[in-house]
Length: 135
Image (cartoon, rainbow, N blue to C red; front, side):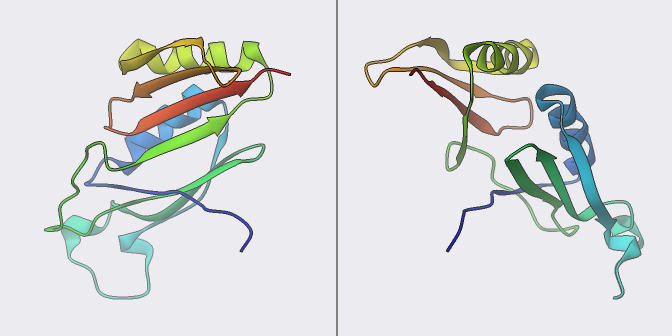
């Protein structure tokens, strides 16, 4: 095993979420495929939904999809995504951008484990744990 790759599921909002993450993390959206482009029959209302997409920024990588029409997504505190930053300026920039439209669950602060840390829920319900371990 090499790594865990987060896979984020949305109910028809995957494209908006990807654009939001592109703005926040300054990365790129790669490999978008919609249900309508897939080689199997899908209902017309699924055509524009994202079946699979990938997001990448340096070593940050995750995958995204919409649910099939009729399937729901339970958004809550059952998942959080941790990002380890390389420097203090980087964590401050991402924290600031996420906080603008998100909900701060824990302010960016120094921690007892020797890091700067924050927890923010974005407007799509995803919880991001931001961590910068000081040297």
